[in-house]
Length: 272
Image 1 (tube, one colour):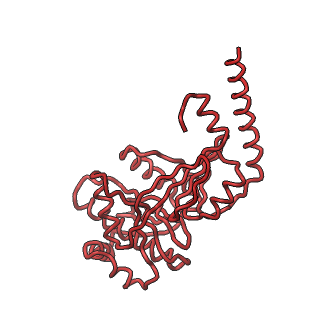
Image 2 (cartoon, one colour):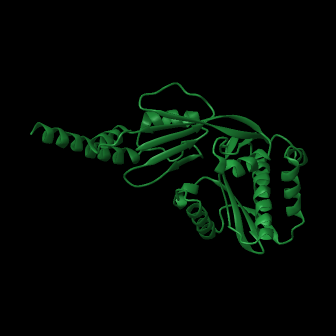
Image 3 (cartoon, one colour):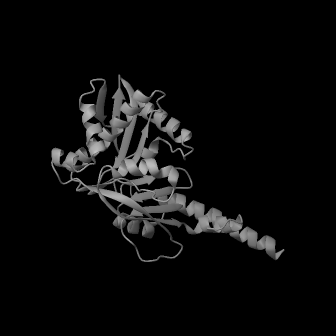
């Protein structure tokens, strides 16, 4: 009987927590940061990118189920906060166009220059063609067996697109800020080698355009969103990012579950 009572009390606290959180969402600030991502519904995830102050505000206010921060700063420990450390590359973009291009590796620089001579390539910035962007994104992520997010995932992001003969072939998305951060790079899987190379060159050009655009809108650097130096299957993308130069530095991912999520995990027999 006592076991049943304990479970009833636990589930009451859980559902009461859900109700309180749902009410708190009504007054939750709409824009803590341009780089705050939220998923709607009863359970809400808040993901903050390179904005430690916004993270501290969100941590105090609540109204979330899962809170995540990506930061270059090692923060003080906090109850129930998990920390994961990895490496990332940050490129200084406080240079003119030629100086920025010259800071890249020879291969990277030459492949970008090829795109200026390819009349079939067209480049654009903005949130146009979202239906095509989402189709390409889903296909790319599924092919790589990576998690697929909804359209709201790109809210507040900058979007750079490359077209080959009128077809969308590559996209780079980034979070704006003093240090802009690349969010995603995804492209069409080409069958023939020539097309594959042209798409690869276009992807390099998109990162160059991203760096120029964010610099012209107030950024001083661009974070290339992490590198993996231990897994051999990630060697290709790591080499791709390193070809843009930049300084290697630590990156921290902080995660906190709300109290009722922790309670739910305990009642479900899952560890936090």
